[in-house]
Length: 114
Length: 113
Image 1 (cartoon, rainbow over the protein chains, first blue to last red):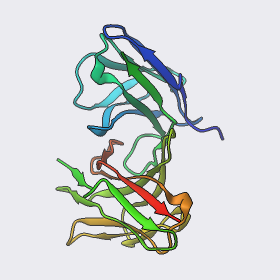
Image 2 (spheres, each protein chain N blue to C red):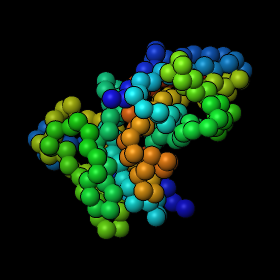
Image 3 (cartoon, rainbow over the protein chains, first blue to last red):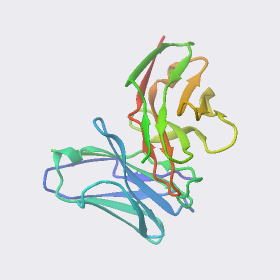
C-alpha cells in the first residue's frame, strides 16, 4: 500500500506570493491533517479535514487555508507569504481521524520564503 | 489544554549504551501518548503508542516506553543504542476525540561510535 505523498517536496517563493501544497493520503484514509514544523516553534497543528469538511483548526492566521476533495486528497494554501512561513509542512492521514486511529505522515514539503 | 515537555534538545550516547529520552505531559483527561522518530529530510514515523491497558509499551526498533500517571511521564528507552538510532525524537499527546496531536519540541539523539 502506497504511503502518504506530498508534492512538491521543495518550494522556493518570495514574500507576498501565495503557495499551494498537495497531499495524497493512503488509500482508504478519509482524514487528512496538516502540521507546520519550524526550528523555533516545533511541530504545530494547522487543521484537519474529514469528508471534505474542516473538522479541527489550529491557531494560525487566516492566510493559511485548506480544502479536501472527494477522493480525500487535500491541499493547503498560504497567501501573502511571510519570511516566517518558511517551514517543513507535513501532512498526515488516518482512517477516520478518531482518537484511536494512527496517523501516517508524509515526507513533507520544504517551503522557503525569500 | 494539553501540553508536552521534552527537557533538553540534544542527547548523546555511545553505541551500545542505554538510551533514555524524557517526556512529561499535561492533560486534564486520560491521554493517548506517542513517540515519533524523524530522520533527516523525512516525515515522522510512529515508534510506539500508549492508549489504554498495559503501561509498558513496546515499539519498533527495540524501543519501549512506560506510562506513569503519577509522574505524568512517558519516557522512551532502548537498552543498547545503535548508530542507526541517530535521529530526532518527538513525544506527542492526544486527548480529544479527534486526531490533533500536540508535540513536544523534540530531542536530537546522537550516537557515538
